[in-house]
Structures are given as structure tokens and as C-alpha cells.
View (cartoon, rainbow, N blue to C red):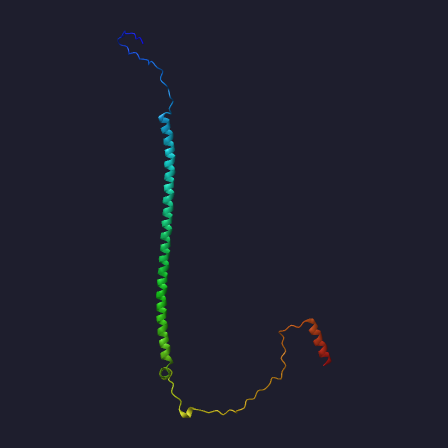
Length: 168
């Protein structure tokens, strides 16, 4: 290869041309590949964020339901405890009333109440009156015939009854 050996001042140097022809391969540009990759990554990132938000919402709903169940169980337990205390009070009153009834059934207590509150006294022999009744019972039969007006007679029975009454 022959070069011209003359140098010219204030000029840019000449470019040397290679002796061979370089092979040009076409590669995709990195910048476009990165842009496509970035768009896909952004889509993937958004979908991952959506999934995370959905999982968080589902977890929050599950925790809310569990806490609601526990609060309703606690309310039911409090109601049950109140009812048990009411039952204990009622049973206590019942036993007291039963004891009062047993005391009031006692004959001496009844007699004392009759004397104090009502001013009653025991019967004296002069106040007792004996009544003599006959020892036989007399039962009289009812001679009237009972007619039932509740039963409605059909037309055939009415005709037969009228015929019977005519012949009497």
C-alpha cells in the first residue's frame, strides 16, 4: 500500500482505510432492547403490585372476619354469663319461697296466724251443731223428654216425622 507522504499542515489527518472489508453484523440496538425490557418489567412490576395488594386485601378481610367472630363470641359469652347470674338469683328466690311455704303449711303456724291476724278462736262444745240426715238417697228420674235442636234433620226425616205425628 502506498501512502502519500506529504503532510499538510492545519488539516486533519487522513483516515486510514483498512486493507480488508469489515464484516457488518446487525445487532439489535441496546437502547431499544432495554426500552422493551423496561416496558415489560414495568408491566410485570404493576401486576406484582396488584397481586400484593389483592393478597393484602384478602388478608385484611380474613383478619376482620376473625376479629368479628371473636367479638360476637365474646358478646354471646357475656349474655350467657348474665343469664346464669339471673338463673342463680331466681333459684335463690325459689328456695326462699319454698322454705316460706313449708313454714306456712305447719299447723301451728296456721293456727297462730288465725288467732293473731283474723281474731279466730277454737270452737267450744256449745258452738258445735249436729245435723241428722236420712241414710237413704232418693234419685228422681227426669220425666221430660229432651229434644235436641242442634241436629238438623234432612228433608226425608222431616217428612217421616210429620207422618208419624199425624197418626198419633
